[in-house]
Image (cartoon, rainbow, N blue to C red; front, side):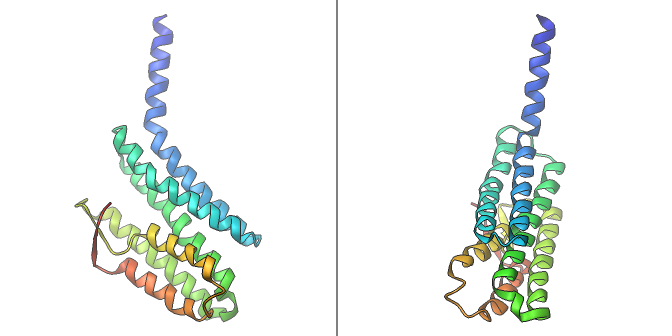
Length: 180
C-alpha cells in the first residue's frame, strides 16, 4: 500500500511540475502547425492554429504561477514557442498572403518582423519583472498581424510594407505597457 501511495504522489508531483511546460509545448506545436499549413496554402487553418497558440500562451504562465512551478526553463521555453507562434508563423502567413509579390522587399519585411520579435523576447528574458512590458509584446504583434488576414483584401498589399515595420518597431521600442 505504501508503495502505491508513494508512486501516486510522485506521479502527481511530476504532472504538476510539467503542466505549464506541456501547455507551452502545445503552443509551440500549434505555431509549427501554422507554419506547415501556410506552406501548404491552408491559410485559414494557419490563422486558426495561431489563435489557438495565443490562447495557450495566455494560460501557460498562469498555470505555472498557480502551481508554484515558475522556472527559468519555462521562461526560456515560452520565448522559444513565442518566436515560432507569434513571430515566424504570422510573418510567413502574411508574407505568403500579401507580400510575396513584392519579392525581396516583401521578404525583408517578414524577416524584420521576426528579428525584432526575437530581440523583444531576448530583452524580456534578461529584464527584471516589474509589472510592465517594455515594447509591444510579440504575442500582441503576431496576433494583430494574423487578425489582418481577415481584411487583407480590403487594403492594398503595399499597406503591409508599412504595417510590418511599424509592428517591428513597436516591439523593440522602449514604451511601457502595464501587464494585464
